[in-house]
Image 1 (spheres, one colour):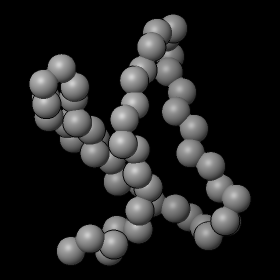
Image 2 (image 1 turned 90 degrees about the horizontal axis):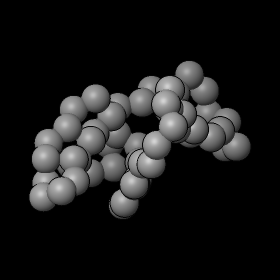
Image 3 (image 1 turned 90 degrees about the vertical axis):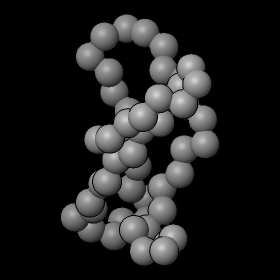
Image 4 (image 1 turned 180 degrees about the vertical axis):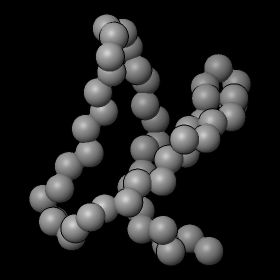
Length: 51
């Protein structure tokens, strides 16, 4: 995970590697503590989509 501050936001980038090709696969975000997480402009794209 890499991140950089942008205004009041922190931009985070994460590389995920799938072990399969299940079209019904899901991504779940889970925290270890109660709180609020704000997400904006979340994208899941294949690695070679943008060059």
